[in-house]
Amino acid sequence: MEVMRAAAEAEAAGRDVIHLEVGQPSTGAPEAVVAAAQRALVDDRLGYVDPRGIEPLRERIARWYDERHGVAVDPGRVMVTTGASGSCMLAFLSCFDPGDRVAVLEPGYPCYRNDLQTFGIEVVGVPVGLGDGFRPTVAHLEAAGSLDGLVLASPSNPTGTVLRSDELEPILTWARANGVRVIVDEIYHGITYDGPAVSALELDPDAIVFNSFSKYFSMTGWRLGWIVAPAELTEPLENLGANLTISAPTLSQIAAVTAFDSVDVADRNVERYRANRAVLLDGLPTAGLNRIAPADGAFYLYVATDHVGDSSVDVARRWLDELAIACTPGTDFDPVHGVDFVRLSYAGTTDEMQRACERLAGWNA
Image 1 (spheres, helix red, strand yellow):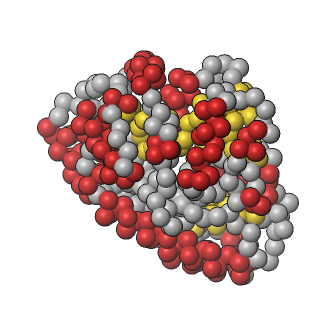
Image 2: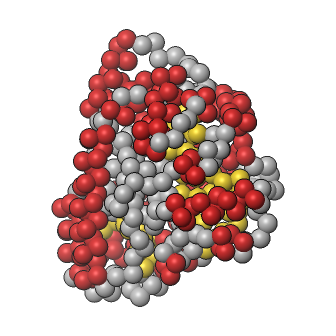
């Protein structure tokens, strides 16, 4: 957020800033979603709805898992939330108690850590590095000591790492055997470059997963996500949701039912991300930036910068000041080793990626 504010100030001063810091699509919602929202504004009262979400949307989400993953999901296990942020909050509160020890990967999405700490839960950082492709293993988890929970993401923010079935299944098996509750963030599903990502539900029907309309369907500001949880958690989730938010935004829910019929639009965006990714992976090494996390999915590159600056915060500041390129310091995602990395988002235009590479190639660190 600080980088975004600084970039906005630079733009207000007349500079041509290339935005590689923002973790959201540069496109808006599919036309069918917008049209459905416009109809609902006229025809619907838009009052409170069931805290679990409107039935047509929960049914459509459940069917999505059958279509995409061949998994039968009871709509009663689906909880619609106020974005994936709401999913995090409800999942953590329903699964863990103050004092529980819950592992998060480093690097990883910072809100996992922040939310857990807010709820009085002990966060256990599990370092995964460039040498192992930022892929967690059972050995990583065993080294963390006794755990009550584990938060995973595939594809990951910031690294773009996608966990294959043969990598995810041993972790889920180990967790079941050791009484560790696993929550899997699948918000970047649909945005992958070497086949679809496996859902944890394919490997464990009682897994807890959450997702969102924000990334694949380009609906960040609509604030709509969902959780699929085992039956014993549906009542706690509903009670928490009813007390904390009453329900997710009604207008967004009505419109989102149509999002699943706009896969062609979403997939065109993914092809643009693929092209942008190729531009950066080809161009960054010419600027001396050649240690990059596996970019299997999402729309990020996690790039080592320890050889071009004292810290990622310093590199981000210099790139904005000297090149008008905004990026996110790795310290957002990893309080220890993030000092050596920056995250670049390639959710913008292909032209922006090309111009970013040109500026970086001419930069004298």
